[in-house]
Length: 291
Image (cartoon, rainbow, N blue to C red; front, side):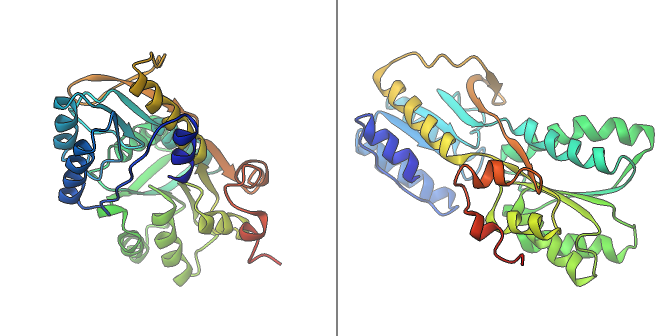
C-alpha cells in the first residue's frame, strides 16, 4: 500500500485508505464512506468475490471508476482487473513438481473458495496435472479447500492424509501460509524435506524454508510492481485516459480489461537473483537460520 500511495501522490493524486480486515459488511460501509469523499476511482481488494459486487455497483452508479486489485470481483463489470497471471502461478507450481516428480502421489490443498484467484490457480495446475493423472503417472490422493486460507486447516488436512498412509510424494499448497501448516505437520512426522512442497507468494518464512530445504519452491510475485502499476492506471482512469490494456477476463457476466503481470518461480537456485535482488526480502533475513 505504501508503494501505491507514493506513486499515486507522485502523479498528483490524493489517496484515501480503508481496511475492512476481511469483514464484508465493513468493506461495504467503507465503500460508502469513500464515495461520500467524492473519489474519482475506487481501488478495491474484495474480501469475497461475489459480495463485493454490491460496493462496485454503488460506485458505478455514482460515476466512479473501479479497479479490482489482485482479486477479481465477479459479475460486476469493473473498469479494470489488475493482478498477476494466476493461471500461470498454478502452472509454474505444477510444472516444477512434475519435472522433479513425474510419477507419484500428489496432495493438493487449495485456498479459500470465495477467492477467485484460487480457482484460477487451480485451472493452471490442472492443465499440467490432469494429463499425467489420465496417463496413470500421477495420482491425486486428495484435494482440499482451506476456509479463509487458514494455515491450521492445512495442518489438519495434511495430518489426515499422513495418517491414511498414502505415501505422499508431493504437495501443492495454495499459498505459503498454507505451506507453513503443511510443513509443520510433515515436520512432526519427520517428513519435512522428504515430501516435496510448492506454494506461492514468496513469504519470508517460505523463502527461509527453501534455503533450509523443507520447501522446494515458491512463486514470487513482485508486489511493488503491482502496486506501482495500479497507481499509474488509477490516475489514468481518473483523467479519462486510455489504459491500452490488451488482455481481458470473464467475470461470470462481463468481459473486463485484465492487466496481467508475470509471476516467477523462485527456488534455491535463483532466490538471490529474484526475491533478494528486488529487495522483497533481505539476504540476511532469508538466510537467517542457515549457518
